[in-house]
Image 1: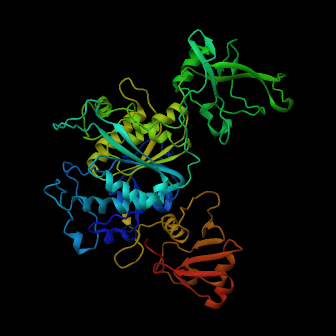
Image 2: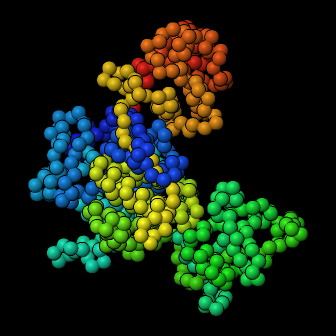
Image 3: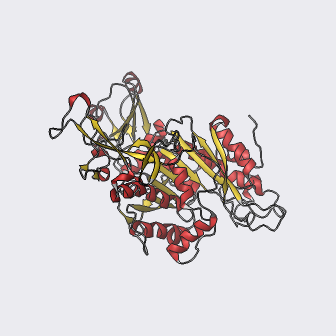
Length: 543
């Protein structure tokens, strides 16, 4: 596979490991709506923010979308990464110039993108996808480094997006009215959806015209019970006026595939003939209310075209003008120069089948990705969550945050989408200049970090989280003896591993890693018991 080289590559190949872990501090005053929605808007440099997110979300993100600087020479972006390399330190704080003014502009862009893409890959789940918008300026360079990181076999498409139907504003004879979206999977495409278009004859007719029977409106597979989506339990009305709830073949209470806000469901509620209805028996002689069968609704497909997979000629998923119109409708003006339309982001997010997917956008800008997630959840009853990262305080607080606030609460004639988000800022690093743990680091903060460093996985704090046993991964259990009083060396201080303390630890039959300020047990005894002791703070790795 070809390998791209540039000035500064060697200096940034491991730069993501040298970036210190920072804490995320949420600001309740800037947060909006439901605090339990699990959505985050993070203000800060996305390189540091992505590193801060690793202990919580590594391998958990199902869909990543980023819209980085295109390096057009008109964006006034600045290379600010603190890379300790003489060849690129002279770039720090300088605005990246135009093609004929800045001969190192492509090197700077690649040095900025490379460590961020490496961290994004660590956050992406095995069955996740990543989509990156770009134009001609860095198209070739981006394609090569994405092939290198994700594998050329995992490239799904480089899709052209028609951004300017008129052809754009260039005055040259060949006007560029399009951009591109690279889409890669991370090794497992089992959750990649197929576009649902009709195949076969329209062999039936109703008062609205010809149609054929489509998919059943009852949800099947995992997460198909009423308890999985309480809002997806509501009645439709059969042609005879009977209330029809989503009851499964086995008689259990299920749920609909689509929510009340979906256009098709709205039509069916207005007129039942917008669905195809059949009377179906329950399985294995099941009866409910003395009945052995019930009404089952199906979609009506009125498009006879034959198509498999998604059409990646993106000329009908919104244009730049639509994105501008959306912002002006919310703000009364255009507060951000390069927004994307929500219809395009909804298409990208919908490529992943998981309705609970975690979505990440580390170049958040005007917040289109968060808006699109909220819209999709409203339409299909999903529980997708988003994490947005915006580096500029003014944009984060005055544009991204305010847009999300408006769509969550409703504005003008637009109904509220609901939900909420926590507004977070990057806090202090875990360690100070002397290598000691910062005073505002909590037990939970340290536990998340220690567990991730030991296992490479995020610590999912739930009912199994029983400190000082903070988590298990395969045959390894990780313990943390830390009460925030690091200068307390007494055996009774809670931070020292003694035989008495060891007897009180939650049991584990496999290997153990125990963190504490000191250890009063001999190395031979620890070895026989399969225990590795690591001293706080000196043996806690900061990467």
